[in-house]
Image (cartoon, rainbow, N blue to C red):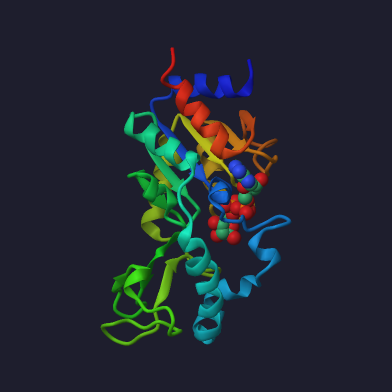
Length: 246
Ligand code: APR
């Protein structure tokens, strides 16, 4: 059986499927991944996303953050992989998406149960009073941006290096890992902790692991049961289509 068909058969039998997505699911939306040849970390210094650096150098950190996440990523639109996952949820074929991405594209495509493991760039938060804003409500031509209520410097509501995973997201991801029949890993290297522990836990709790990625990852020869080599924007619509055939 070809791997795509094998994946479809597992998904048809599953009564609880959870997707676990990484930067690769958004590559076809024009967002570069973090790692690899054209990855973000080959062009920018990851120090700008270190929480200690952010608080000690907010203006210079914000300059780079604005360029990457608001001027550039802000214009990205969901691609066929995001839409296929949203469609599967609507049909009752997908319970949740745990995403490491902060680009909000699953939500824009219509997915409802999205667990934001690393937060969301489309929300700015005041670390002092907890007020949140959408980026378009804030004038990002004046950096660093400030809270309209107390004047504190705003922070993108995503997880910086050195910050903990939001507890609610961590708890929900654990619950998915412990209850899913199938985990669908899409476009993730499995190199970043603690996110990479979530699929490991799913495997320990008996989930079948399907992986979609044009390149092999840290998961491929460790926990993956069915490896479908290819781009998310091609494979996911093909899977979603086959799930309604026959
Ligand atoms: N479709 C599917 N997968 C793809 C595609 C595509 N079109 N193009 C690339 N990929 C794969 C790559 O082969 C790679 O395995 O996507 C993966 C991207 O890997 P990373 O850039 O490491 O992204 P990710 O695993 O999401 O990183 C995890 O690292 O820096 C942190 O917080 C950041 O959430 C991020 C975390």
